[in-house]
Image 1: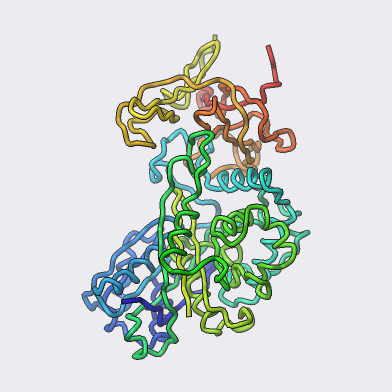
Image 2 (image 1 turned 120 degrees about the horizontal axis):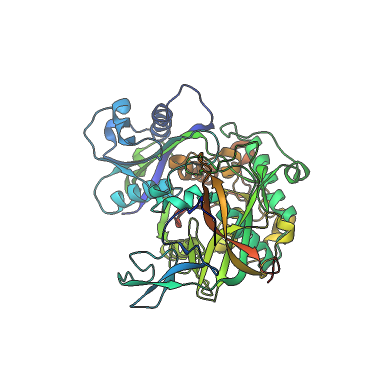
Length: 381
Length: 148
């Protein structure tokens, strides 16, 4: 039985002093339940993800102690993709009629800091200043620009678009538009990536309520079909984050490519059908690379596509219509469900001022992060 | 001979002190995969018989970036501060077409680094402990520098 999303809820992303991640998540769940017209006691199973909250399943204390199985999931930046996938699977497998996916996080300011042992890496890697995911993003886009003729101007255009989209989203974090010139004048952090080309860790929560497609009429929210949820880890030879060494001369596709191909195949939907996409934009370079890795263009085409405005809300292939990670920041456990929230609004035609014109029918969500893991979700009307 | 008051950041990463320092990789007995640092298991086939192998001291720069702010500390243990921090570069160097190793680069200016350029291994201090001991790590320098 196919799973459909009947309700979505989003707590704004940003900084909320004095408010816990779990309180934000409870707000997001209540919004999703209200959107679906579902009471918490009707929810039969759930999957909840967080980096900072060790027991995110304790959220039942705020929602109602109904005794349902609520399972914690974690896959780095792909966490919310896993939460949604498992909720959809629970319905597809006939385990339950109504399921929920929840994500929450509340990160301290600044670059992520952790002991390398949490990622299975040796201590010297952190001591000598190599344990920064941002090195990977700088090195991957530097090589990509060298190989495929992408310019610094294009990096800045992507960031400017995402800030502009965020400025029209009252739940986004960074809502001040920035010009290409301002972005190119911001301090270099990891060549060729500058401060305003990066997303930052922040706070927020999101949730989605799913049910059996044949029961969707019982609920209030206009259903959106879950056509595919995939998750893939890195293969030997892929150029991946947090790798002290990699095999040479053996270019292997990123797990994004693997997750994307599998998702298109499962959905019976091709890249040409995608009407609106949410792509992991940890930095502006990532959005550019992920356009190609998700089959949405050929390597190098981005230079012209972005100059021509094709990825703008009014363009041929709108990308990160709510501002993406650059505009919203990244509360890791919640980030992927923010993407799903945005796609559901877009496919319902309920995205307000940032609505993609032409009644989009297929939405595509993509996550990527350490230690080389990618999740793809395809939704349709 | 390297002077006293210097220690390697970790054992088993590189042959040092030595006239010609080398990185110590691991070669899988089952499939021949070369990894760095040498670990207990093979990333390709899962084999558990991995033997030490010295990696070439020269290679080509595959890609690079820079670190323009002081890394979060811990885990970074440089003796600098946010004010005294000096940006450094990081890259992957292709050693003999078998393995690419991620390392600090001695040239911090991205305008003076080029994908494809020749690099050579050096052992450099990256921090000084409170007692004055310099802690050494591996890095790659443009091969044109300080040619004998």
